Length: 349
Image (cartoon, rainbow, N blue to C red; front, side):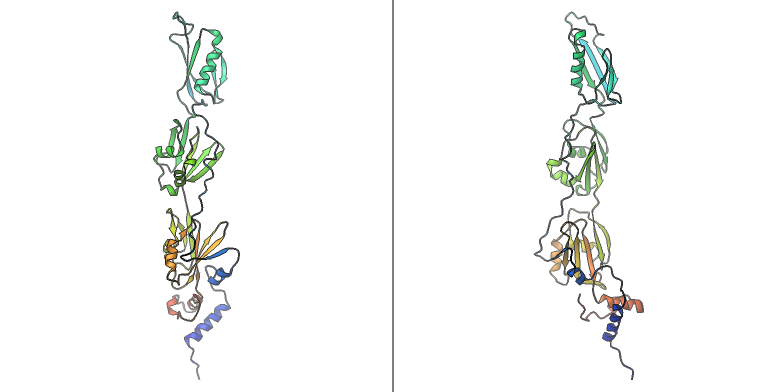
């Protein structure tokens, strides 16, 4: 007699066949994640603490070297020097009404002054140079005075570059702060939370998100001559893979995202593969934490909606055990839909 083969017996045979071979998988099974070591496992529910996102790297704007004083001569500056002699009789040894010289500070920071020779003036203020010239001429006339005007102060400028609305060179007038320069340059082209500010001062460099800079006055430091400020796009991502409909790399393009939003970005779980209790959120970092969300619990949707996702988090959904049957049937028959396989064989989801 020909023995009739029931669907359950056929499925058991297929599963036993699958046990002898390695089935394709996108990652570890639910039980493997739950019982593995090396990280802290947290069951995610309404009572789970909702930690804030890790602080963005500030790298110390306030810790940069102090700003150098403004109004200093620098190589390339054009200076105008005026000399005159105070004389009650109206007679003077100098050209009437005064002697005016226009000199350019050389690449070595020096200028050639008549009767005085070559002087190094870079880094000196115009008033200090005026006093030094007057003192040098003190023995050569009656109360000879000197006035120095820096007509093209090349040093007292800062650079605004990158994703600024109006990049360029800006004069450093007074105690111009970092945020004031960005505002003068029209701000960034993207939202403040998605813009990174990088400040280079000589050999030192610091950076932080624009939103953090605006929220903390301590880091809104005065700029120094020669500072270079660059606005960069702040690229942040989270990852989704496993039994989701749309695995991949996703931009973290909002001040805050919830786990429920991340699941929606990945187009939800695959009906033919996903284990509802096998939704895991891997959080790299010193704590090495893995959060488990059990979507077979109706209240888990509320927990996912209030739990914050952090940039760099990894969303992983494991395969259900019954998915093995679908994979075997697909390999044998070409039928790739789990709807063709009975779903109530007692396999844990």
